[in-house]
Amino acid sequence: MKGTNLQIDSQGRLRHFLTISGLNRQLLTEILDTAESFAGITEQTVKKVPLLRGKTIVNLFFEASTRTRTTFELAAKRLSADVLNINITQSSTTKGETLLDTLRNIEAMHVDMFVVRHGESGAAHFIASHVAPHTSVINAGDGRHSHPTQAMLDMFTIRRAKGPDFGRLRVAIVGDVLHSRVARSQIHALNLLNTGEVRIVAPGTLVPAFAESLGVKVFHDLHAGIRDVDVIMMLRLQHERMKGALLPSEHEYYELFGLTEKKIANASPDAIVMHPGPINRGVEMDSEVADGPRSVILQQVTHGIAVRMAVMSMAMRSKQDGND
Amino acid sequence: MSDIHDIPGMLDTMAAQLRELTSHRQLNNPAMVGIHSGGVWIAEQLHRRLDLGGAPGSLDISFYRDDFTRIGMNPVVHTSALSFSIDDRHIILVDDVLHTGRTIRAALNELFDYGRPASILLAVLIDRGGRELPIEANVTGRRIELAEGEHIKLTGPDPLALEIRRGA
Figure (cartoon, rainbow over the protein chains, first blue to last red):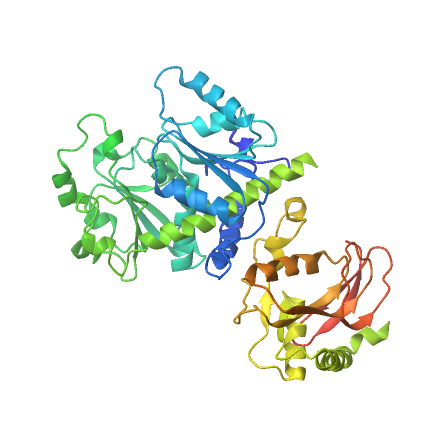
């Protein structure tokens, strides 16, 4: 893979947004601060600002997603950009070539930004390294690799609930870490923001090899894993990515790792519960928890719009400067 | 240039001019809107002097600037707060320093996203010249000439003070 600095321009600003790793704390904080400003406008009567008027943004989705695509679409529209949604069912053969061809065709329509979701790790990076100089790429999830806007909206949600000092926080990421691009991005972001303690809570078969090298503590027991934590970040059980028998059954998973009101009692009294959606109720968590007072799951969706507005406007700005 | 330090005097002058203008033009029940941040402070002062009802509105025009793509924005943008409907209201738009006119252009655009005001007056504490757009103030506290590379900045809100700085 080429250097991750592909996403940073010569002045140290965001040009593409592909992955959290390779960014610095200052840039993450700038994204969160900018998102805070946009969160303000989504709460006022006039929700639309003319920042990206005349720009064309293409949502290029090779993989199904409702929430991510609609929040990206809404974010672009609230910035007054024109949005095109293109859903492409992926052909399994000649991926690289097909991808590049698709890209060239859409680029010929003079697009300013691609928002890309793809089932293959590195797809957004591949596209970013091939687009015209005036085009920005935002990664909306690639394979098992990265989902940086999800991680940033999670950081935003934590900061709003717990304040800006991540150093005093204990955060547990619970579930299928192995297959989760969300978890990977979350861990990088939490580390960059100097989070006091980051834990992974998962069955042994769902812990990736990289876990220890990222400085996280690994637990195989939910009860111990969420003891005294301030933030519980649940992951979705990735049925569609699960190959082979990594789990005995969903029921057994729920018994051991499903979050219930009873189990939460072990966490800090004001702990919040997060989930990137969509929730498998009765597998990752009880409805009682998902809809309960500690749940910030719907706030995560709302915050997703502001965070995506921030990332889009920041990337567009850098690109403009490059042309001057 | 010492008279730029008499801000209360300038505010009194502005309030008197606004009173005369609104009564002459029969602008009933005008609403005041300040541009963040200096304009909001001035709007509060004028609002008190004119004894208008309610609270003045505030605009943060960062998202409406025409140079956003070139200079980028300050990440911390305040929420615009207009607690009243501007439809068919007479609006007194207030800013601290009038220079190129671009801030006012942005503020007018934002105001029209909120509705259709009956009319808009512009009141500024300082007019320093250098217009790049056909925009003029109806009411001005003081006109000053600044040399190349000089800037004037309002600090506040308590106390309000004007300061001339050299350089970027």
